[in-house]
Length: 321
Picture 1: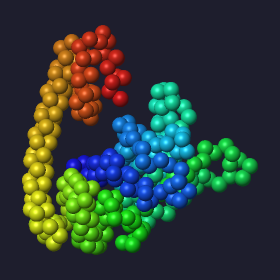
Picture 2 (picture 1 turned 180 degrees about the vertical axis):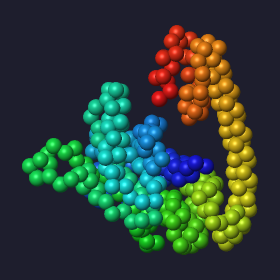
Picture 3 (picture 1 turned 45 degrees about the vertical axis):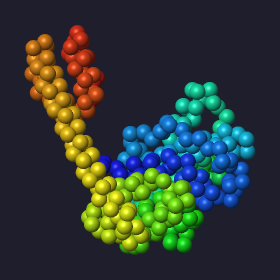
Picture 4 (picture 1 turned 120 degrees about the vertical axis):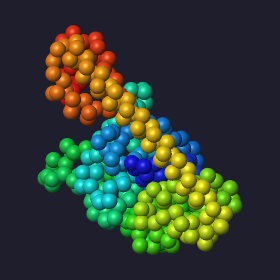
């Protein structure tokens, strides 16, 4: 997968039981008594733009905060190092959410950004927007759109600091394990917790999500290694690891075939577009060939339609930027 961290985070935090467990264990004391975590609703919209997508994933929940509407934005940073511009990126994100909700005639609400950092280096950046802006005299600070985000730095969590015994512990143990020397211990801990939760009917259908992620990100371990670790807790689950690995291989083949079909369609469209440029406009297609190769399938389909209908070749330039 292009970004297994993104998929694992979204599949995990899209579970209401996961988020409830997270909030019960990790909300600061000043917020735990005023946010109604018993009535949270997931929002389908994502507010991560294309530039942020490489580094951030998001899951948004609507809650009540002292009776007023609020949005909890769970943002997952999957860079391996802290980014000093994170506050500015989060501000852009929050503005996108505000703009959408205002268009939907919802104007009075609060946004609380929660940043879960999953990197190798410890987080060493301030938690406020003002921390990443050059220092000004105090009398000028009122012009800064300052805010603070809640940080959960997995790189600094010790075994004892991962709280709770619910499903969020599985998530954090697995995420922490990918950059830790004690991967085996943490995965065993996660599977033990999951076994107990499944017996209590609280962790159903999460084992496959965990194993898919581990198989995707642990390039230094093979399927047999993972089976050996999991089998120490459950021989049944150890057997399931191979089944999941086979599924991943099949999906990879299917994805490869689909990508092959898309590439074939792209090549076909490029050839047709270039041919139309020669026959309809009588120009050499050389200047457009490389630019067309940079376009995705959707963009090429749009260009193809425009090439057939436009009256002047100059109209094509705005689609080739």
